[in-house]
Image 1 (spheres, rainbow, N blue to C red):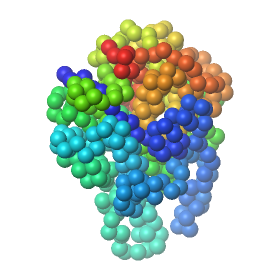
Image 2: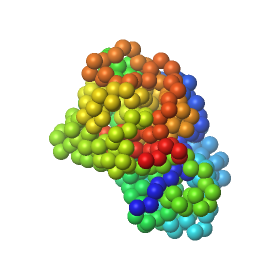
Image 3: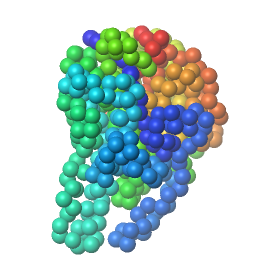
Image 4: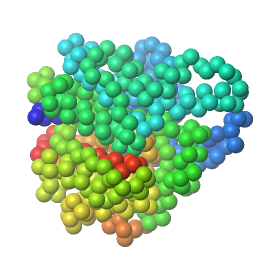
Length: 412
């Protein structure tokens, strides 16, 4: 089985339009959550004001400039939020335009819901405005594979290209799938990650209907946490066979040393600590690090009462009391919940935390909850000496993924 190097990172969110901008914000304790009014169309039920983390206006123009041609206008926002980070990761890796790798590179993105903005605009046109004809670009913009298709065409990549959809675990599954293909020798490199743009009127109302949204803000692991905050954006990692990256003198930013996947087979929305623990244990066992203590935990950390308590229990089940001494970060408190794109963005930020030796603080934290008795990084960023990053991703339907990364000098 080939080792998996990380040679490129890309990110966009409410915190900024690059990995550096996102990292500078979270490490300094700056957040991108703000109150927004959604759904004030004349065809809807009226505006709803809630906290959200939305990408700044002008993003499409910036993407077009970066690509050197108009592209964003033909994409739903969710696809654009994947394309720009893919460009950033590809350029950092030094592989853009590599003639050999064009057929030995995969693109795998994860998205929970796809082109909701396009879909809702079409429904408004059809049901609200009573227009019989839908826009001719509706289908190619709505399809969940729009992002990977756009990336393949933009970068002339002819290897395996497809999307994965598993709700909030989507981009974590995409990362694991790309790693598995490299490990087995099917490809030499893979652009992996995900994105989401679900802060549309209908989507927000749907999330509100299941009482998942906080009316205040995202407060992971805090005793008064009361729900998640929706975010927009995406992130992409360039994974590469370790020997291939070394042979070409690439800068290796980290190593993916283990991944675990499981299903709760329990409840459509309620998490199971046992199911989560199986994924975490599987990743740690594959990586051979089950007994190590130098682990930075990047929690799924949605800020919902059930999730954060269940995640605490799953960590203690796997690592015992040692889990309570491992530093825990939860960056959704800064960039919101990107649904299918969250795990990729959190992986990017976690890898930067390993590289910088600095754990960003959990934002909006108020007071401790006895049910979440972990070593939470709160207040301000904390220097760390961790050699490993555990990235958790848990989804509705009981779908769990755990990813274990190592710093370049902290492998298994």
